[in-house]
Image (cartoon, rainbow, N blue to C red; front, side, top):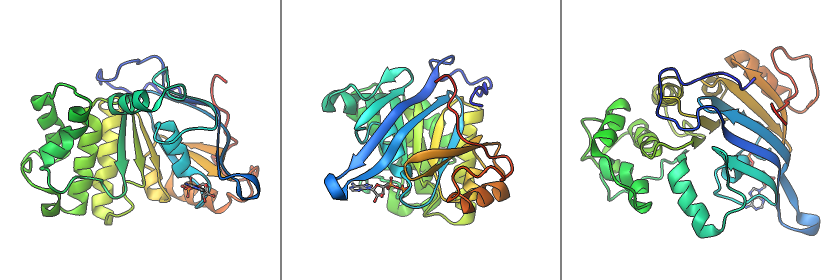
Length: 274
Ligand code: ADP
């Protein structure tokens, strides 16, 4: 199911043969005693390099927690997280921050750009923070790819929402991360800008071999992915390959019936190789 060799002529991603992301029996509990909430309940999954995965589920099902724990932004209470073969869960804070800057990209719903920095400065900020050499030609190539080649000196408040999100995508890609995590990246955008942003994420995967994991509640956004993982109550309860908009919407509507098998093209999730 995750065996697709996705990097058509990409070559920019290391570890082509391994997995971009692996979670083994990951749990996350917020609070204690009677008020404890199990946000992730024994989650195991594996994503190959060069794949585009959407994560969907009802509000409170654990989507954001999954993304944050997988990206090393939040700590698991149990289990193992590996990004491009390197264990995230075993690291101390400082080492984890360093690892995130080198190996992980983020795209958030609200862009998270610094208002005083230009487009180009925002794009290279993670590289600067990581003390890495800034490849100006590659930065401009990425900014051109996302359609901002002519706007390098603009500041975020001179850009539309769609353009701001494209800066955020450039910023995520420029560090050549093993995985780009996107949390509702189109949530604040109009339909046309959303389509452009999804097109860019898809192109990063299909043309450049990038791996993308995207949380979304929108079946149209999910249909841009290669596969959808469905979450309910902190568990992966289903998976769909080559998701169509209607099939995703129908599956979402039935997520309460977690083991229901009558919905076309969806089946209980079985992570490969575990
Ligand atoms: P989703 O992204 O699917 O809406 P979340 O991952 O945000 O779900 O939340 C999963 C569950 O964990 C929810 O019940 C939520 O209330 C709880 N939760 C998330 N973050 C916290 C937190 N910081 N403290 C306490 N409970 C939390």
